[in-house]
Structure formats: structure tokens, C-alpha cells
Image 1: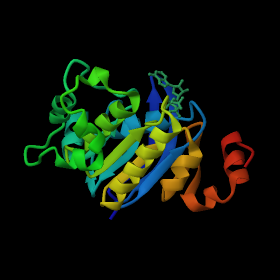
Image 2: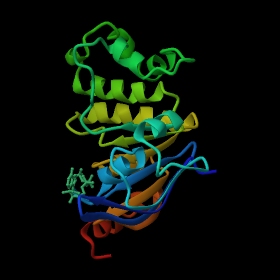
Image 3: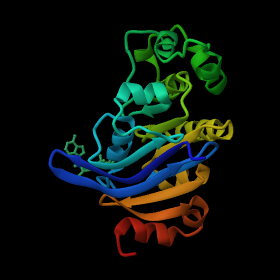
Image 4: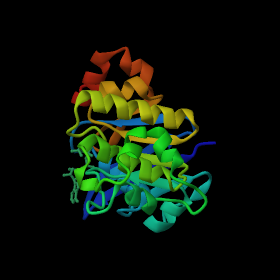
Length: 231
Ligand code: ATP
């Protein structure tokens, strides 16, 4: 079964239609990669899925349950985790206290520290003092501690050094290998295609490619044309 399904989802910003009837799935154990030029509507899709903004029409289905009328809080508790752009941390709180915010009552912090041992060594440090990469690890780890079924990750690599981005990509792959469904929005298409399974390329709010990451990985010209819109 798909963990997450978007069926014919339309989303507006104010009165302006931005997303025009997209079909997207995320499956347990897989990374679905959502690519596209700036302004294509990637962030809008993630926000519509987690309930940050409403959708105009279509279905959002989580493990068979209809979510599109549910509040953002209900969606989060049902298993849709959203790692938003911009690394929202409680800057005055320690790393560990930030993690506790996301904690499911029946779990401990081990999962976070297993994935990112870097955070354990920084557990008592005020999170404002963490590097950008560590802050990104923190918000991903915090999302996991709520025991989600699917995690939506928006441009986790923004502003980070390549070696840090590689580390984050490896961790996201590991999460999928452990059975989580991931929907990953990424500006560095090649890096995302390296770890991803299923790819979607979005252009002006429409899906213009829906297929394997491998095909795009092996055909840079095709990816280029998909971005530019002459294919
Ligand atoms: P980027 O890589 O730049 O984040 P994106 O593919 O994620 O691009 P969105 O951020 O979803 O694209 O933006 C899609 C369209 O919606 C753009 O035309 C953008 O100007 C518009 N838009 C985004 N956020 C808002 C907002 N809060 N209010 C009004 N319009 C918005």
C-alpha cells in the first residue's frame, strides 16, 4: 500500500491557482523526489499535504485514510511529518530539549541519536550554537521522534557545504531503508536522484515527469529539457 497518495490535487495561493491536479505517491521504504525550477510549486505541494495551507480540490490519502479536511495537527498526529524549509528550532533551548518537543510518549531519543550521533555530542548545547548542518539534523531527527508514516522534507541542503549535504542524504536513505516513506523536495537534482527511487518533475504546477530516478540519473539531457519545458 502507498503510505501517502495525492490524487488530482489543486492548490491556490490566494486566488491564484499554483498546483494543477498533481498525482504523487510515497511508499514505505522509498524516497519520492520532487524536482522542478524555482516557483514550480514544490513547497506549495508539501504545505498542502501537511495542512499548512488548504488544498482547493483533490484527495490526500494517508494509509487509506482521507486527510484533506483534517487540520495540520491531526495530520501530524496521524503520521505526516513536515520538515519545513528554514530549520525551525527553539534557539534558546538545548539540542536535547528541542528533540523532546517531537517525542512520541512511547519512545526515547535513541532513534535520533542513532541516526545522527553528531547530535548526541551536542545534546546539552543551546541549539542556536549548532552549525547549519547540525540544525538540519536536529529538525529531521525531531520529526522522526513523532513516529511518522511519511516525512516531507523541504530543501534540507539549502546553504550547506557539499560534505554536509552528502551526510544528510545518506541519513535520509537510511530512514527509507528502515521502512519510512519520504517525499523529498530538493534543489540539487543530481544528489536527490542518487538516493531516490521515484521522481517527479514539476513545471508550473504540473507533473511533467513521473518515473524512476534511475532514468533521469542516466539521462541528464532529459532532465535538463524537463526543467526548461521543451519536452
Ligand atoms: P522554490 O524552489 O523557489 O521554493 P517551489 O517550487 O517550492 O520553488 P513554491 O514556493 O511552491 O515553489 O511557489 C510556487 C508559486 O507560488 C510561486 O509563483 C510563488 O511566487 C507563489 N507563492 C509561494 N508562496 C506564496 C505565498 N505565501 N503567497 C503567495 N504566493 C506564494
